[in-house]
Image 1 (cartoon, rainbow, N blue to C red):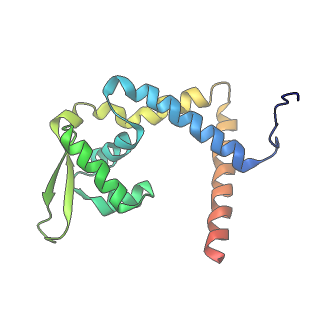
Image 2 (image 1 turned 90 degrees about the vertical axis):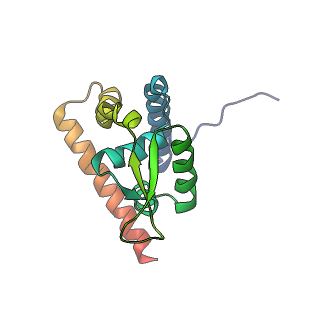
Length: 150
């Protein structure tokens, strides 16, 4: 029996976006490795660098993730010294998350997505980049509309 590789359809947008996203995450993880951060931790810190003292629920909404998963992530980040938690003064049931001085020393990583974009968009003209973002935005909007119809 010969081993032939099974080739996926070349025109599958979902597959192309999924593979591209996975590879972008791998590149981002490599960029963050020297800083002892994961992409998920970097996203949390990015939220806090933009607005400190945010609830776990707000972070979960931003990350489009489940609150319990983000809560566990924040707990691990607190143990590692990246964030600190405190009770909200306006809602005793709500916990606010803030960046620590250790995290703020890495604030330059806020713009790391620009470095990642530079890698991913090598060889593209500025017009092509603008067109790509416009088209991907339209694809996203179509997907969102489709989901809201259900």
